[in-house]
Image 1: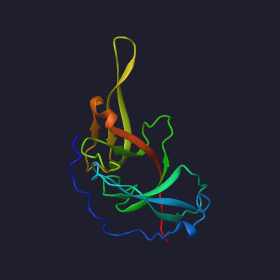
Image 2: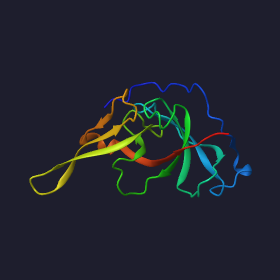
Image 3: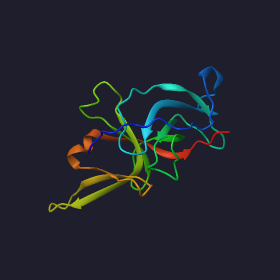
Length: 174
């Protein structure tokens, strides 16, 4: 698969207020906002990821496995609009089949960055071997917008792609 594409800059920012940790109640009323911009398209450019601040989240019980990141692009519309800040929970195992995930690509082109990120619906195709075991035939990261193509990951590339988190919801601004 190719990771060559440019992440477009967001055209409009949702109205959310990012505050310092001194102004936040971490994991009680606020979640950390990470600087990564996940592409809703192919994997975006490699980038360093750090905490940008904290954002208030109402109407949901928070925990330390949750964080906020921005999703750039149109491939997950209408569920995730371009430039949305979204709440994610770190992936801790279990099935990913059919879930919307934040995936990271770490390849030879990304030795000094945290990698490239995308948000897609996860699908796995398996094949049955003659020795009565199953193995991955491929992983498909599927966009919700039918105008975009899925990302197909072959078994030889599967070690370079890691599911980091599960999408929970779009964070609505004021």
